[in-house]
Amino acid sequence: MGSPSKPWGKGRRVQHVRAGDGVGDTSLVGAWNMRPVGGVIVDESGNGNDGTIVGSPTAMQTLLGTGLWYDDAADYVNIGNPANGAVDMGTDDFTLACWVRGLGSTDFGALFRKIGVDPRYYFYISDTGFLRALVDDSVHLAYADTAVIPCIESKLTRVVAAFDRSEADGITIYVDGVDATDSRTGSLAAVGDIDNGNDLHIGGPASQWLIGTIIAPKIYKGKAFTAAQALADYQDGARAIQGKSDYGVNASVANETAGTLGENSSPVEISSGTWQITEEVIGGQNCKVIECIAAGVCYIPRSVFEATPTEMAYGSWEFWLYRVGGGGDNPRGSFISPDETATPAGGYRWDFSDASSLIVENGVGVTITGAAVTASVWHQIKITRASDGDFGFYADGASLGTGNDTTITTGEYMTFDMDAGDKIAYADQRGDHSLIKQLGVVAP
Picture 1 (cartoon, one colour):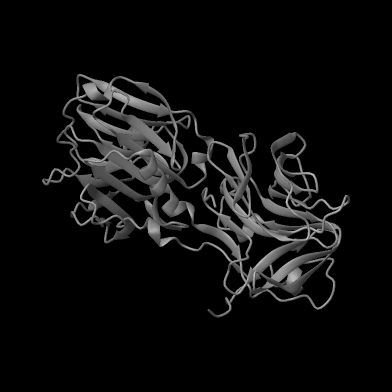
Picture 2 (picture 1 turned 135 degrees about the vertical axis):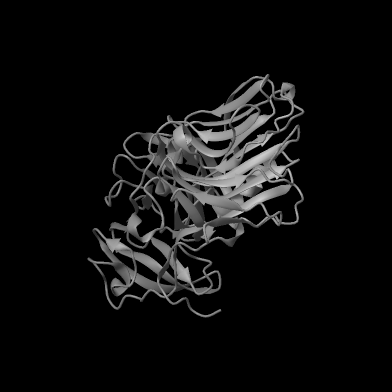
């Protein structure tokens, strides 16, 4: 494989989230590619349930492909009420799923709605930020709610509503592959036939209009996603790379104390100390390496990632670390940071010493305490943070511990506060030793 052509690759699109993925699964009755074709949204499930754009939602490119941006009460996609019965659920199990980045709503933010008079089914974001999945046969009503999910308003989030009609508590809402159901009202098992003559809308008009983006909506009939299926479905998009360092960065010709590292060929900016981009063999691969020559701080701004401030505070971070060791050596870095300083309040950092490996909320306290990693050896470090604030912390594929903190919900920088001799791998030619930020939680 040849050398990449640029020192920082961002926004690597993930083809797995194409609407048509899953074709061949006979329960997939609708899978819509949100790229308009002459005013039509094409159903890639093979069932021909194309939708018509109503109003003027805007097609926009996202990390996960084309989405439709809704920002008006008249914006939605009308799937109609197909004669094949594909979107009439009757008494069947079913699943509604999409990626969404909401920015609020005037009332309810409809994702899927087959509603007019009862019977009906409906999946929406409330104006206060919780999700509700609802069915009603005009006699019996059942619905499930999540707690408020603040990050859904400005982060690409996978939302799934699964309806298992055999269970009273059969409505489950998954957020980013995790069961986020907070409460249930009514018995789903008691709800009868919900077929109706109403059109199915993706997004919603009038009081149910969404302000936000919907990507790759899908409907499954005869299948209520299990926890394992919801997680697998989420992982397809979670792997999307928002930023990854590439081998094309220049090696330093001398010590660098200002500007951007690699003779201004990388996005890594120097705040203090002395640094170089050097070359070293790691795991049999020729690598470019960020080496600290004299203690200081360098950082990467959000502007080089394909990420909102909220997306910078969730997902997965991966890098390779070499620490010299010894009592005075304590490399650390704020992977979620409001500014370019070493350990600012309002950020989370990793922290390695001879005694322990830590995840710390700066200025507050330790979130995870794990075993120390060996000095003078390269280690692959991975940190994950889910939408509910759950952290994972790994070295060389093994867990260093878990924790939870929901305090900080945005980030603007990644910072590295290193001592002389400490190193971070920048990239090899195969991309195996890179700095990586992924959209979602991807555990080793």
